[in-house]
Image (cartoon, rainbow, N blue to C red; front, side, top):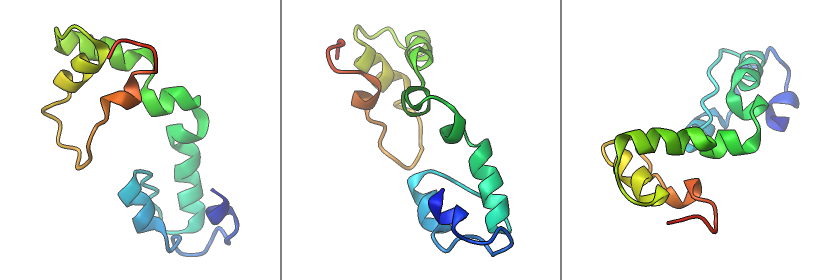
Length: 101
């Protein structure tokens, strides 16, 4: 956000836009101002960190509807095995330490 705020709102899209999109945050727009608006609308800007990163309990509830595996980690891995996102989904991210794996 600092990179966007340090430029003029009417400037063309930030030069790092493509590398940001490759890592996840897609901020479309014809100008820095448009990209700032997209960032403000993005859940990363207004949702609590845990919900943005892990989806909270909703992720596990959805996985339980799609898998009968015995642990959360196994349910998540099984429920998402068919997804083709271009990145590896890490069940460890969605299973806090100390919970069944």
